[in-house]
Length: 309
Image (cartoon, rainbow, N blue to C red; front, side):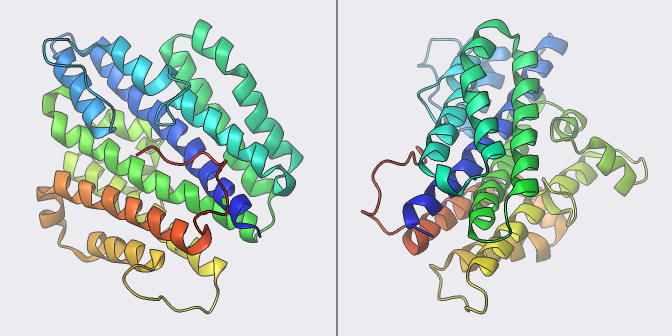
């Protein structure tokens, strides 16, 4: 497979997942601001913008929910926003059109075409629900129509790395914002994880159990551990039989952070969650850089839409 096509596939997976996860995070935070009149809006919005890597308003300017929406949802220029991510995903799909199924291309193109009307006319909850539905459709079509070879592996690799990163950001928002952040039940619901969590823990609800589930559950597709392991599997299937090649090998980077989470004593892990989640995000960034060097040599393509972070 040409490296420019592989690179576009990788970013399609990342951008669709980024739009989905950002919609989930914003939905949880805006729900908190609406339901709890005692939450300090400026603190909650600044904490969210900081965790998401977006620019905060200058001192003296209140951070409001509208600023958060403009920066993280409606901005069609920034690939860090929902609209920008979906636009970038469609742009990369156009460049990899020759290896995508017609159904997958149509799903991405239809989503892009519907963006102007959705951002102009929908309420935030309606817009977030639509984004989640479109991302689920793209994911389902990807799994149903893509042969299990390089095309599928690069799409899922991008999706898995982005999901691990964004779930870590979601957990970090809960810890860093304190009372200005959604509770764990709201976060579980935003991930579609609440029912699976209750079944796993037989109805018991506790902050420690919720954090452990989102971090370490080996079978839930949105947990950090599962996503990291899935990314490792994709890399192994791209080069079967090839052993890891040093500290800068992407499988080594991902395997190191996965084993750290998996085998560190739970109390130590939960006692230092902000730093642990920062380490996960850093490892995802390093793995992404290592993947670029290994599979997308510099200079072979200058027209793809890459990561602004």
